[in-house]
Image (cartoon, rainbow, N blue to C red):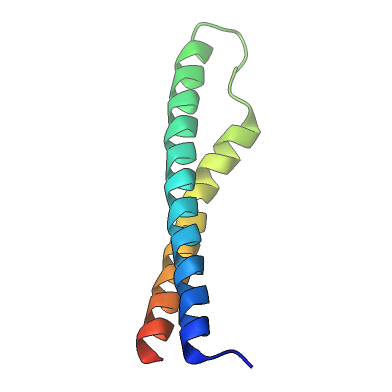
Length: 83
């Protein structure tokens, strides 16, 4: 059986990993936003779009993923305080 201290340590480790993941996802979002903008602009000079539809779908999903990560981190922090 794990002690409260062990559970808190595990939650803190999970929080740190989640914070790092959040930063990575934000960085990926920024990179994709830049790529989408460049490809959309470049598409203006071509007869067909250079922007893959998957990029647009991914761009639309980033906010939901970031919100989920932030909510999870908040719940972990709340649980840690309540222990």
